[in-house]
Image (tube, rainbow, N blue to C red; front, side, top):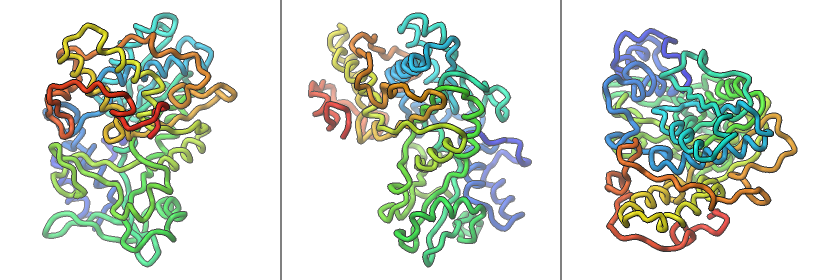
Length: 420
């Protein structure tokens, strides 16, 4: 989300008209330029004034932080573990890139108060987003702590490509009588071809995909922020070999409009969200070039389980809540971890200056002094800014009024370590 809104003139708040004007002037534009205008230009999906915003009960999707405070609570537990691994520094900075409406930060800070001193007094939580940053002026630099993000990288503008006769061509955006369309041409940046080169021989003609060139600037900004500590990245995507394979011949670009999923990015310009899967091989490479080491990656299912989500669920019925309130909390907790829900997200760990320590508990809790049963169970409260998924407002989340008392493995389809 770190694109300069003043990088070019914006004479109109209508992104479709503005894109048409740019194409008329240049003949064609890259899809990354189109996506930046549609999402972040004046009047775009994330910047349109007076709208309800994309992440709310009237919007197009919900996120892990907006589903239940247990997500932010367990991020707080992981931050405390990072603090321990770093020798309990004071201050300990947590810098969230792409903080959006601030739900994650509020939940983290609130739950940190229950974890006690000295961690609660050492934590300094900073939110960085387009709405409160002008290219980095408010972003801390040289900190000890953690840089974290949730569903940030998937919203970076991407370049689209197509394989023709075994070669990589870029798919540009052109304007015609029936609206916008894709047109192949030579790549605008050699890095696009370099990213795809290891996989081209296995890809059929007509294969389409995406390349995110925003990862290197993001990694440089992370490196400038973090002097010593960890990077925690939650997003959906795969490593390169899984992302660029014949079975994904239509690519991963998706459009979301009023709870409807499609692969047509040229409809509802400025009114629909556009996302693409993250290439975590490229994330590793970008952060490595910036001086950070990859510690590994896991699923959100396993990450939250290791930190304590299963313990939260097990103790819910004993809290003395009415059955309806138990289910109202239980269902979104499960949705956070279900492999067919938000549990399919990936959680990547990177670090700088922490060699020789044990693994973070969210990545591997074996041998760690961590007892989830001692953690307070976070609960939804009325009008606290989280979604009420039990009202059935979203596909696949309706509740029939019964309480499923199955085991963790029966509900999630995972083994005792949280893996599928």
